[in-house]
Amino acid sequence: MPNTKNVLITGGAGFIGSNYVIQAVKNTANKIVVLDKLTYAGDLQNLSDVAEDANFSFVEGDICDKKLVEQLFETHRFDRVIHFAAESHVDNSISGPAEFIQTNIVGTFTLLQAAYQAWMTGPNQFKSGAENRRFLHVSTDEVYGSLGKTGLFTEQTAYAPNSPYSASKASSDFIVRSYFHTYGLPVVTTNCSNNYGPFQHKEKLIPTIIRKALAGETIPIYGDGQNIRDWLYVADHCTGIALALETGRIGETYNIGGENERTNLYIAQTICTLLDELQPKATSYGEQIGFVTDRPGHDFRYAIDATKIVGELGWKADEHFESGIRKTVAWYLNNSDRL
Image 1: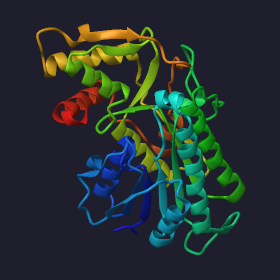
Image 2: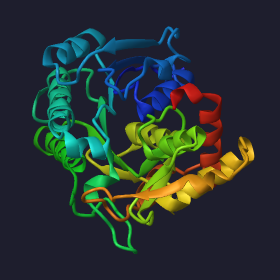
Image 3: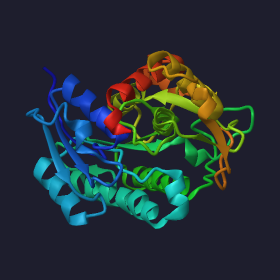
Image 4: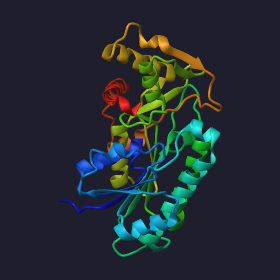
């Protein structure tokens, strides 16, 4: 059996984080410590499948709490940090940006500084036994801004964030980069496209469409519904993160995308068609689709070129959008309390 590792996972009670934690607990012998503030986006119910596992422990707390973070590093002597914790809802960042600046920027700095102090004695000088530590920072394709009708985001695409959310994530990416170039901290960054799947918070697009459809309410679609996102099934994203963490090159960025570009209107129509099949009613759910005033600064299109992680690390997505969305709709129908 390979050596077990002590792993800190921030934001592990959130959507993507909880999916990753469940994979990690079930597929490795590592000791997993989840640090989560349990804001509206975090839910311990997401972790119920592993809550009693001997290799899992949970700490309720804030990544901005310097004393707590340093204490956790001292107690657990982490070999790995996987940093999911973030404020991530664009609409919320427009109405209340301060929390995004605090969590996404200050919180990331607090974690990086704690890792640096725990693992290193100075720039490029590791403490004995800490030479193989790794810190993986989970980010988003939104830092790159908006694409036109053609082209893809690559790891070389210039940053051009357009919302307070994406600007705060871009800032955190730059701070992570600086800790590698200044101190030699062993960091890897991943930037992903839009995720979907089990445990996603009900405010997000796909759960909202399902919830509104089942409730018989208007399904709200911004603008004309032609904004395009590249959709990535959450389990595939988690596989990519695990690969980047263990085999990615230190200091590098890896884009993880599903190569599943779909318009928001197509997403709504596809979900309605699935609901017509899986939970039919007298009229089609598609009749509930309606258009609402577009979001301020709404990016037109995101799409990721995943060539680097595919070529270097051998990652591939197991789900295409149509298979993943069927699994997702079925999960929400079986877990309607999560809507």
